[in-house]
Image 1 (spheres, rainbow, N blue to C red):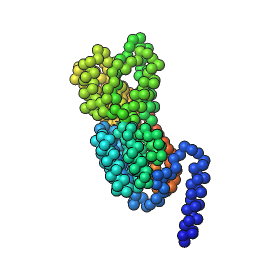
Image 2: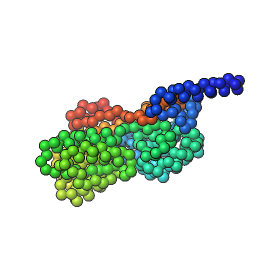
Image 3: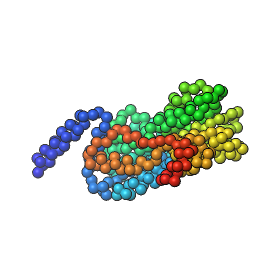
Image 4: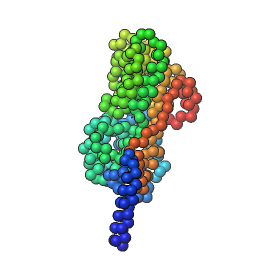
Length: 332
Ligand code: GYE
């Protein structure tokens, strides 16, 4: 019996090696933990969520929880309230509990190597969901599943560049940044700057974090309305901050979408409503519906199959007209 098992194992290794020699990009299946091949109802996954800062996050949490329910896989869920130390403790507790997989959306990009190393040592594969880490050692996680935030920033920049292509004087732009140090804040600023630099009239005159919240966006916008002599456009890294900015602009007696144009990222329900009402001018979509893809990754790893090292979400953009058409069918 032992001999047969040994032979089988050797065969499996050989198979895995042939499978991997074909291409370098896909991550090795269960690189950190092997393939448990457990019945799905016996799998336990720990998910360390960022918080509940935005409409996007609420939709993301709901989608993840529902997807696990549908798949019949047990989910342990924690909300870090946008604090890295809370997320690190949640991950450590999942390691201690001996979960099969850990998925998390890192609040910021840096500072994860130690805890990810602990997960690797415990043979628990980690799946990055939504946001990236900057760890040099990519063997610390199996895959990164989520949007291309640089591309999102570029799409926002392209709309702005086109909107002001005939401008003869400076277009004063204020930027409401997401959480400082987070992948989407860094990348959405980079992509946007990269595109608008082609037109020297387009100038970011102020840029500050509103921490991806409505209250943060409102507060920063109030201050900017006081300190800036002229604001033509707001580029907000998410809908919620844009919605906060709308409140501040209206309170200052100006018309959002007209006196001051607004471009945001996400396309969650409240953002889309503001877009149809003409208060926002353009939204770049960022899909929070990552649950099904996360389940797919877990099922593949459990079955010993390969997963791609990077899984990018497909997404588009919305003008005011397109939002009117799309809104009735949106799920969130
Ligand atoms: O755009 C924002 C949320 O990480 C993509 O986080 C996510 C961002 C999303 O707070 O609304």
